[in-house]
Image (cartoon, rainbow, N blue to C red; front, side, top):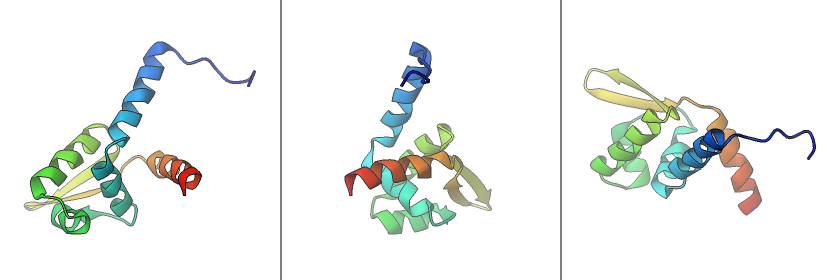
Length: 98
């Protein structure tokens, strides 16, 4: 423990915000689906069974936070994992729960 650095309040607030973003089950389902690779919005709607508006809302939040990347081809938008540390974090947490 003595070699751990004390984090500033600003840093702790950023960490708490990241956990807040990841605390929504729909967002976790989207991330889980995207761990297999890039998907378009329609595929994600089908995969998680939520409305297109709801999926788009959560994809927008995850993209704005830098967790997901988006790519547009014509009128179709594709999403992928932009921050690979999210997969590591999810694995750490899931391995402790399952």
